[in-house]
Image (cartoon, rainbow, N blue to C red; front, side, top):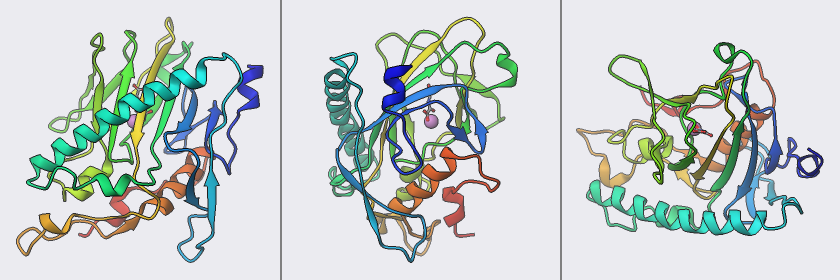
Length: 263
Ligand code: OGA
Ligand code: NI
């Protein structure tokens, strides 16, 4: 606990240790450690569109355990390669050049998270992570053998467990792929349930583009018959707005891609 306290995140720096994240304004039953794949990187200072002040975002590493930093970074480097490979395959599947998405990640805001879900005395009253869709392009998740991740099946709204498979990773399509592909791909709604007996660990890497990327349906994929379904939005501003609402329990609904939907 002492080591964790030394690298605690705050409202300004969202990297480091945190034990009271909120998803959609409800506190999650978990503790997390977050770090950037690219350190340092830059983010708008505030969500207000008129404000063009920038802030440097950087990691906080604990001194103990001593190998922690190196092990985390090595894992992140390998999963990053896999992320680019998957983005290339998604581009090809949309009849785009394989490197179509690469430019968006030059100053990527991607981050890795260590999730720890402690046993919960009343698991029916809490969630490890409340229902949500990941805001990035892709998420690659490693999970232990405990289980708890569930995805919502679109046809009937039933929560389906994603059973842990040894040595396998879970890949989530995030909101940005949904927007870029003009809904050829859809991001998946998911949540994490907790249990009263066993703690659970999971390690997602969230692939986030650069702060200056304006996220919108790709021009090659829209035409008169298939007009864009979203207005462009700035990813940095979106990310800052989301970080703030996850830090504090706010009264208002946090920012969603549906806010940019063209109806
Ligand atoms: C998340 C998430 C899933 C898991 O952190 O966004 O959905 O299995 N985690 O921990
Ligand atoms: Ni998620």
